[in-house]
Length: 392
Ligand code: TGC
Ligand code: FAD
Image (cartoon, rainbow, N blue to C red; front, side, top):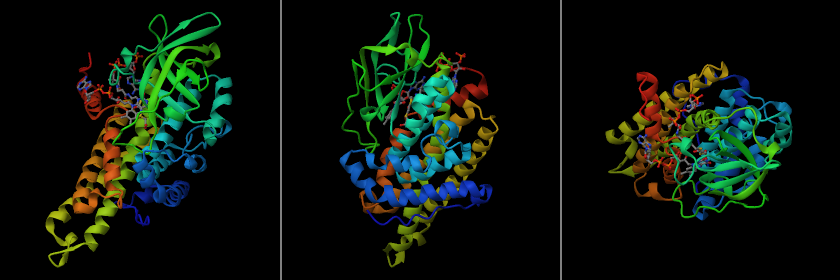
């Protein structure tokens, strides 16, 4: 892996829209990624291992609970700050951003928003420091895009709930300390339960042989007659809108994160194209390569503006789920297309682990699928603009 000389593209001076605090947060995260992620990430991805030693550093840059209030151990930052941290982390690797997204948006957020005070005090400080790692179990073997059909269920046994079922494709599962698990009660109502490692009948086998997000640990959550203490039910929200509400927060982070991956591919391709000589000229002088680079910077700039505007709407509590969905879809597709074009600019070197592009490209195949597939997000926009529901 080459030294990380990343220079962030900022064609429309988006930086001028940021406060001094935003810039400081962004810069801290960027320097941390250069120091702690870039030198090791290729090796960990090749070995399909998550680099656990970076967990405390992720906590220090505010990646765990950026928007959770300080009194619960979070950083109490605004939504743009959260987005910028996700962007910088994903510039390093989407798998590392996944760990941060799950911890912040899918574990800390529901405990904060749907939990009671005792649950907030018990879990949030430990999750904020990375002492505990969380996972989020919504997807099941038979229910991915339609989580409302979930089969995982719990029965009221008087003193406790009895949980049965299985979740699959769960980020952080193999080493999580606590899982936010979505399951149906006997009446079919959907609730969140906090399942802790060590509970009898709870196991988290790792999913192997992934070609994507190799530096992120993915696994199953299996519940075989697990006794859940009654105080582990999230009391303040139920129904499918509860897990989907968490997804809004995570999808927002991905809309920013994907820009980071795209920026890294663009920056790598631009540098390479200016240095690589063929036919006696830098390949950047050929029109076909300039077209690719020009389109890349245009798409990155559009995505930056979309994310920034969405962040301001979120700060004002005005962003709709459909607006968040559009930004997730657009920015991830933009990043995948850029990764593919950037790889071509590097020719044969594009497939080598000497450069980050192929790793980003493979990672983005997961990012375009999780948190709602590209197709599902098209249909969410379709429903929003036509009023006609393609899912029913
Ligand atoms: P539908 O009938 O439309 O909705 C049920 C209820 O939910 C409400 N709702 C939302 N609420 C909050 N936020 C949203 N984004 C919401 N979308 C819908 C809706 O208003 C309704 O409320 P109510 O009060 O009337 O009951 O549900 P549906 O069954 O027709 O499904 C709709 C669909 C397909 C859009 C939705 O289920 C969906 O988004 N599917 C995609 C599933 C998905 O994204 N899974 C992600 C799993 S987690 C993950 O991938 C983590 S990866 C993490 C990482 O590593 O970074
Ligand atoms: P399916 O729902 O079976 O979809 C297959 C295809 O059919 C897709 O192309 C889809 O777009 C299309 N399709 C489905 N329905 C429709 C429709 N109505 N109209 C048109 N096309 C349709 N989940 C979690 O709960 N927690 C996690 O932490 C998590 N982490 C993940 C990490 C990784 C690496 C991956 C790959 C996935 C992860 N997921 C997680 C699961 C992810 O959210 C699901 O994979 C995703 O929601 C899609 O579900 P599925 O894989 O079952 O595909």
